[in-house]
Length: 491
Image (cartoon, rainbow, N blue to C red; front, side):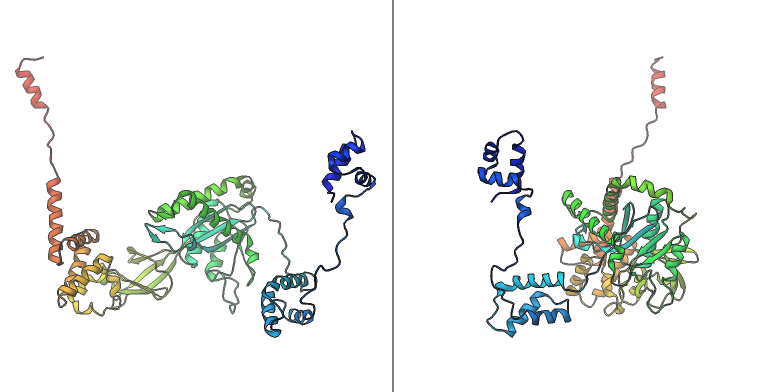
């Protein structure tokens, strides 16, 4: 069979050579060459589409039945229909014929099926639209100091230049949204006209509400002079720029991690720096389009608005406060008082009389608790019997070694175990948790017994050794040497 390439070569050679020579070099005989020389078409243009089947259609007898199902429920998959036919007509259809039915169903959808949704590419205007959203990063397998690091990324982008930035967070809360958006705008140095999110509960009001957005989110947008928009339910494509940015950013993170050779980071700060460096490198190729956007951005306000929520909370008799459906301990001296709590995306700040008293890591989800032994240890020592059935007892084991120490105490002297363990916690509160844990480790490695007195003795040794290690060298009095030289009669 002669190909288009052969004919083109023939016609090119015939401009300088005879028909016989050109035909030989093009790989065809003289008669065939003469035919294509006189034709005004290429071989591919002379082919006629095949209108007949090369083998019988195994679904011809049942196709009308299949078509009826498809017309009634266009979403039915060919595999579902094939399983139905095998049950309805036992022994008629073999597994290898599934692909034939899939092709027929695909052809029906393209020629007779319902119209498909059309997506309309948009023309983006510089400085007009920004989008942001949260995306889960846990699937990338990142660890901090060897421990799995479950987290999200707040992600912001300008739809015209694709300039992007983001930061680690742990929930899709308003505080995370507010901090992430404000950090992005101040890093950018201006405000776009509009900001779009999907239907975040932190930003979008509930369906029964007459308001489009929550009051806090509306106030945040108003502070920066931006108009808010949101995507419709089930229409993620309307927030498509940020969705595509999620995919590309996570792929870039994964590639950078593979190039780095490790997914483990020594600290949260190291991981944050890794992400920010990656954002800088990705934005380096967007400077030209970004330069078109920057002059069109609105001016930033004189200051940021608060990216935290203010709450007034009463301290209960258990020395705890309840914030966002989670329980936290505070110093027992605050029992019965009302404290001011600033709820940030990742922490709580507890104020009393305008003084910052505590900074507490914010718990994720609901129904959790974080009770710190140093807040309650004084009274727990006075009521050691309360320890055994204390609701939040699990929080009073600051590390696995403290838990092992308690188990050893239970085995050796169960009647004194609680009182002895609480004494260990008191030492940790006064002398430092790390020092007490180190002493416990030494006792676990060298002794079968553990007590607060033995830990106190080890801590005293450490203090004595530290004192011995201090060497005092008095400074030399050079005046004595001067007197010596004068007495020797030296000038």
